[in-house]
Length: 229
Image 1 (cartoon, rainbow, N blue to C red):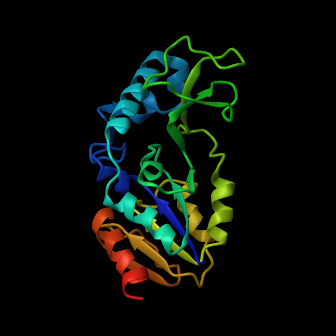
Image 2 (tube, rainbow, N blue to C red):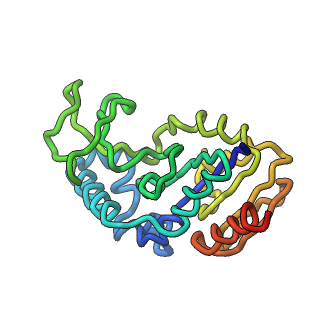
């Protein structure tokens, strides 16, 4: 079975009503990202950061996967689908995708403030101040903040190296190291770019641009890969 590797960004979650820090005003739900999404912000005001992510988690749990999420899950009938996502929501999993690599963590888990790979499921929607990991430090969201290492990037790069087909959905290729993953895809593998504004991919071979949003663009992708075969 051919391996279909899909890299998703904020554009696919936006169609489920989830805002991102890449909104036009440069703010994330009214906050400067450097006040809520950096290790320094956590050191400075952990209560604010915790409250911010507790609220984001409630929004994510209330959101539903959209048709693009479901169609990617359905493609597992035809391909060995591996999804790499820059998003911290769990919408791919809830839509039924079985292989999802989260580059920037997943908000439905907490982690030790001392050891990032020490993670726990969250009961309900909140992490409370005073909740500690087994090492005795405060639990924080399992999210990679600006200035932190991206521990899953090497895993994602290896997945990209195995791609027979590669799809990019709803990302501007502006955030590194995630933006560099396309460099690991074999040059001869067809690469489908789904976004209303196509990022600059002129240096790559075998590019097919689908200049649409995620829902309609993934529907077109399914037609190309499955329905018209």
